[in-house]
Every structure is written in C-alpha cells, then in structure tokens.
Amino acid sequence: MKSPDSDISKILSTEDRTEEEVARFAELMRVFLDLEPPPDPYGLFPHYAEYKRVFRQAVDGRNADTLEDAFLTLYCHVHGHEAPYTPDERRLVNETGGYWCHAGGISPLLKAGPFINRDTVSADFGAGNGLQCLLLQKLYPHEKTIQIEISSRMVEAGKYLQQWLNVPDERVEWIVADVCDVVPRDMDFIYLYRPVRPEGKGRAFYERFARALDCEDRRVVIFSIADCLHQFLSSHFEVFYTDGHLTCFGNGR
Ligand SMILES: C[S@@+](CC[C@H](N)C(=O)[O-])C[C@H]1O[C@@H](n2cnc3c(N)ncnc32)[C@H](O)[C@@H]1O
View 1 (spheres, rainbow, N blue to C red):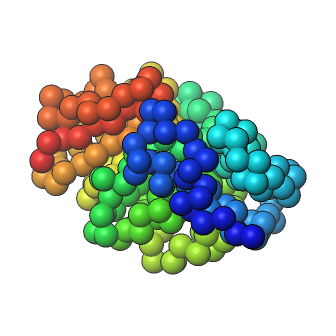
View 2 (tube, protein in one colour; view 1 turned 30 degrees about the vertical axis):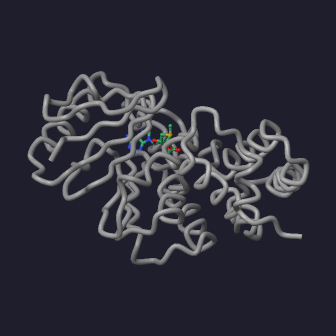
View 3 (tube, rainbow, N blue to C red; view 1 turned 135 degrees about the vertical axis):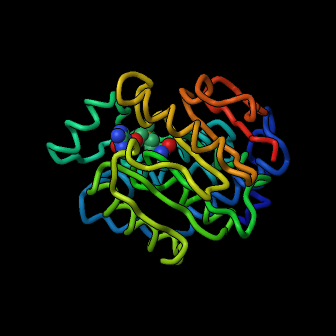
C-alpha cells in the first residue's frame, strides 16, 4: 500500500531540521517513489532500478538512517555525477578550475522554501543536468528557472529529466555556456556549487558576478555550496545561514 507523505515524515529524523524541512523531505521522497524510471538515452543511470528497489524497501523498513541513505544514493545517481563532456568542454572546465559534477545535496532544496514564491526567477550557475532547480520547481513551482551549464550532453539529459518530472517547458530556460560569459541579471534566487575556482579567469567570474549583483534593486538570495563568492560580495550582502557546506546570502532589499 502507498504510504502518504505524512507517514514518511514520521520516519525521518527531526534532528537539525524544522518541521517544514521534514515535510519537504517527505514530499521529495514521495516524488521519487511515485515516478517511473527516468528516460536514459545517454546511459547515465545504470543502477536506477536497483537503487529504487533499495529505497522502496527502506520506506517499508521505517529506519530513519537507512531511509535517508537509500534516498540519497538514488538522488545522487540521478544527478549523473559521471558527466559527459566533449573535448572542448573538458578543456574549458580544466582552464577555469571548474568542479566536475557533484550533487549539491538536499539541504538547499529543503531550506529554499521561504525564499521562493510564484514570481521567483531562479538560476543554477553550473547546473549539471539541472536536477537541483528542477526539484525546486517540483517542490515550489515558480515563474522560471535558468540553468547554465558547460556540458551540452548534461543539458540534453536534463531536458529529459524535466519531462520526467513534469515541469512545464516554459518554466525552464537551458543555456549551454561557460558561466564566465553569463552575468546574473533579473534573478531572485541564485544557486551555485563552485562552478569555477576563484583564480585567474575564475576570479574574474566571481568579481563580475558580485558587481552585477550590487546593481540589482530587487531582493536577491544566493544559496552557495562550497562557497567561493563571499569574499567578492559587497557589504550589501549578508550571510544569514551557513553550515560549512551551504552558505546563504541576501542583499537586504
Ligand atoms: C559541482 S557541480 C554542481 C551541479 C549542480 N549545480 C548541483 O549543485 O548539484 C558543478 C557543475 O559546474 C559545471 N561547470 C564547471 N565549469 C563550468 C563552466 N566554466 N561553465 C559552466 N558550467 C561549468 C560542471 O560541468 C558541473 O556540472
């Protein structure tokens, strides 16, 4: 029998999580429980069926740690950490000291709720297959998400995931580009997981990024994993949360 989200949330640990975060976590698990296997034309999810079976068993087993581990294994798998790059894309990632594709984890997904409303424009700089912001769209449907990623193949895979998650076409703009060539403008919620190292060309990226954010007269919230941006932001931005992995800033507007 199908367990409702409230049932899953009773299994989850409440340690270091608000009631709201536990509810969102249960909702996220429900999304993965209910979905068919994702379309996989590029062979990026070879272990999906196995990990899904273990996850389903863990829901029935009702042990918090086992359940979280099983879910995270499945979630990381769908993130496709074996990102495929063309030789040119690989050269560019190497030049900018970019991070290869690692999943940013679920804490940004669970904590983003209060900062996203119907009119929000969100963005992921270095989006991989875009799963993070697709899941944000799933949990908190909003105006638009802009996904910027160097790997054209990951972007193609992400478009399949968008259909799989049933996120409407008009809600997501995919941009295959070097993040160094994209300036944040008219964005309300920005997510990034250290797409480039803050040295050389990468340093210029963070400097330009911070300058552009200073010119915004709207409220901007940034969720940054393995943060490199802090040192470049002006005093208009303040950290309102950090746990060493995720750092959150807002400009107080
Ligand atoms: C650590 S992963 C983060 C993936 C996803 N945003 C998340 O948090 O789960 C960093 C991503 O940045 C991309 N990347 C690296 N250098 C880049 C560049 N110069 N321009 C655009 N994307 C880049 C990588 O291909 C990878 O997908």
